[in-house]
Image (cartoon, rainbow, N blue to C red; front, side):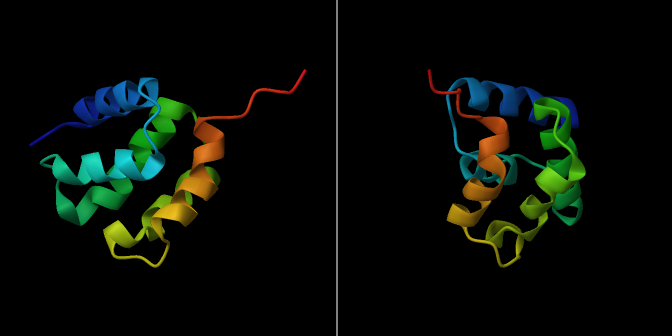
Length: 90
């Protein structure tokens, strides 16, 4: 079983490769993570890695991949800008 530390390291690596939020979530699902807690674990790890508030990461719990109603596109649109903020234009 993968630990939260393993997931955190995976998320850091994926961010450095510019992975989408959904690709990160799909990777978490592929890891041997306790499925009954996968939403909570994902929220905790995203908060830890990217220093985000619960309000910002909460849409993750509603992702279709976790049985919710939010599409891949919606998750990327809702959470992605906080992980990959646009640089101010000069």
